[in-house]
Image 1 (cartoon, rainbow, N blue to C red):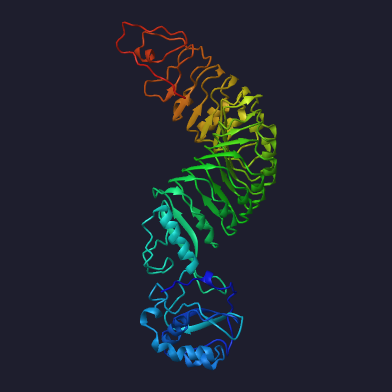
Image 2: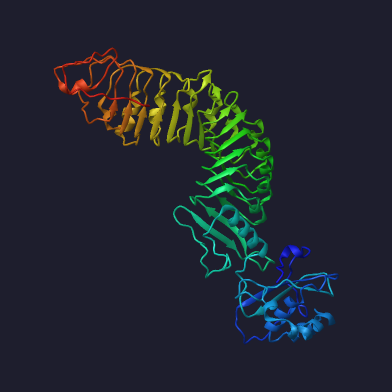
Amino acid sequence: MTSTSMSDYPPTTVVSASPPTSVVADEKRDSVDTTIRMNLHSDGPYDHPDLLVSFLQTLSAFQDLVDSGAFVDVAQDTLRRGDDLSQERLQYNRYGSHQLKRHLLVTKTSSPVHFVLPGDSTANTTDPQEVKALEIIAKKLQYKKWNFSEDPCSENGSWIKSRDKNNENLVSCNCTLDGDSFCHITQIFLKRQNLSGVIPPEFATLTYLEELDLTRNYLNGSLPVELGSLVHLKNLSLGINRLSGYIPKEFGNLSSLISLVLLSNNLSGRLPRQLAKLSALKKLHIGSNQFSGRIPISFSRFKVLNDFRASSNNFEGEIPDFIAKWKKISILRLEASSLKGPIPSKFSSLINLKDLRISDLTGGGSDLSFVSNLKNLKILVLRNALIYGDIRPVIGEFKNLKILDLGFNNLTGQIPDTFKTQRNKGYDLQYLYLGNNTLTGNLNSWLGKISHVDLSFNNYSVDFPSWVTRDTQLNLIGNSFKFNFSEERNEAYLQRNFKCNKRDRHCKLLVSIG
C-alpha cells in the first residue's frame, strides 16, 4: 500500500468546529475523547478513498457525519463501494490502537474540520512527519534503541519518557498544544550512546523541539545549518564529540535558545556575530575547540548571559573589556584562550561572579585591585596571568572562597593575616595555590588546616615551620628555608640549591607538576 503523510496534503490550521460540523457519537461508548484531524479541500483528489472508508466503518454513528453536511455525494459513493476494498487497504495507520487518526481528502469546503469523538484515544499519537524524521535519524545514526513498532509518545510504550540521573536516553513529548490533536517531540537526549556519523539535518523537522542533547558521542562532520530553524529550541548540547567546521550564522535565529554547549570538539573559525541576537542566551560553552579571531564586539549585547566558557582556543587580541557589561555573569572561564592581557579593570563591576578563571596570558600585566569587589567568588584562578603586586587582604575575607590559584605570577610580599582570621572563623578555603611567585614572610600553622597548599618556588628563607610534618598536604619545595638537619622529618623537602646526601638511603623526592 502507498504510504501517505501530512506532507502529501496542503498545510492547514486545525480548528474546533461547532455543530453541525462537529459530531458527537454515542455517549455510551468509551468516555475517552478521540481527536481526528480531517483536511477538507475544495479541489482535493480522491486518491485515497480507502482512508475515508476505514474511518467511517470504524464509527457506529457514521451517518451523523453525513447528516452534518460535511460530506458530499462523492463521499457517500465512496462509502457504498467500500465493501469491494480489501482489508489490507484499510490498514493505513501503523500504530494499530490509534486507527481513528486519518488524513482525509474530500470536497465541499477548504476549511479543516476538527472532530471530537468518544472511543479509542489518540491523545498520545505522534505527528507522522515527526515519526518519519525519527526513523531517518535512527537509521543515519545506526541507533537501535528506539522501538518504532510503538508510538514514540504513547504513555504505555517502551520509549523513555522520564529523565534518569544522566539523561542518557530520553524522548519527551507535548500532547497539550492548543488546537492540535497530535503529540510533538520536545526533548531528545542521546548522551553517551556511542553514536557516530554526522548529525542528521532531519532534527530540524522536529519543529517543536525544545531540547537536543547529543553530548559525549563520536559524532563528526559539521554543524547542520538546518538546526537554525528550530525557533522553539532552548537547550542545544553537542559537546564532547568530533565535530568540525564553523558555527553557522543561522544559529543566530534560535530566538528561544537559553543554552548552547559546543565544548570539546574540533570546531574552528570565527565566532559568528549573529549569535548576539540570542537575547535569551544564559549559557555559552565553546571551550576546547580551535576558534580564532576576536570575540565579536556584538557579544556586548548579551544581557542575561551568566555562564561563558571559552578556554583552550586560538582567539586574538586582548580580553574584551565589554565583558564588563555582562552584569549577570557568574561563571567566566578564559583559561589558555590565547587572549592577551591585561585583565580589564572594569571587571571589578562583575559583582555576581562566583567562578573566575583566566590563565596563560601574554601582553600586559594586572594587579589584583579589580578583584576587591568580587566578594561572591567561590573559585578564583588567575594562573600564569601576568599578575603582579601583593595579595589584596580583602581576598582573605571572601566568605565563600574555596579555591584560590594565583600560581606562576609575579606576586610579592606576604600572605595577608586576613586569611588566618577568616580561617579561624570557619571559612572553607580548601585549595591555596601560590607557587612560583616571590612571596616571603613567616608561615603560620593555620596553613596546615587547608586541604591543599602549594607555596613552592617562592622566596621563603625563614626557619622551617616546626608544625609541618610528613603528613601535611603542603608543597614547600624550591624555597630557601633554614633547616635543623638533625631532625629527620625535614630531609624530605627540597630547597633551592639543595645538595642531596648520597649516603642517606631514606630520601624522598617530591615533584610538583602544577
